[in-house]
Length: 187
Image (cartoon, rainbow, N blue to C red):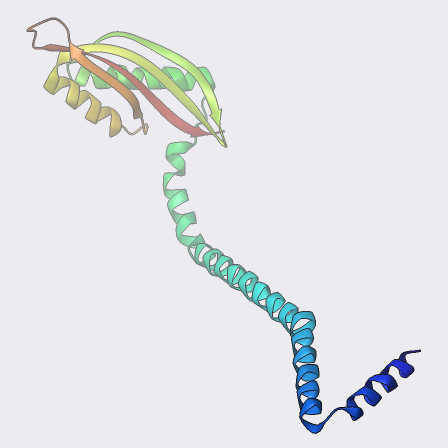
């Protein structure tokens, strides 16, 4: 059934004048090229473009991962250097007592008067355990600054999470300070 239609198209074209035949062939070629572009070429090129984008993303991820892997040894050395600060063979209570003693020792060395110290429940944060203590103290501003500096530079790797400083009374040279200090250890 397809062949009779083609034969009728060929018969129709053969009856056209030379100029009309040229235009008909040009139209047929144009329609064929446009159809081939829409049905074959454009989908192939768009698929190739999306694959090239995916390949570029994968290459960027591989380069990033390779850079991290190349630094693996340096990271391991750094981790080993600080692991002694993060590991603790003490129980939770013993660790908290150790932190409280360290804070008391630093306060005495800095001539800071501790009003109160309250341990906060230890929290699991990822693969670490966070021990925190809230404390209130009084001292001259210079002594408080020295106290805070010594906490941050303690061998126990204590860190000040937050603090609040205000005068003890109006026109007083003594400052009152509230601190939250914490220490992080491996689980």
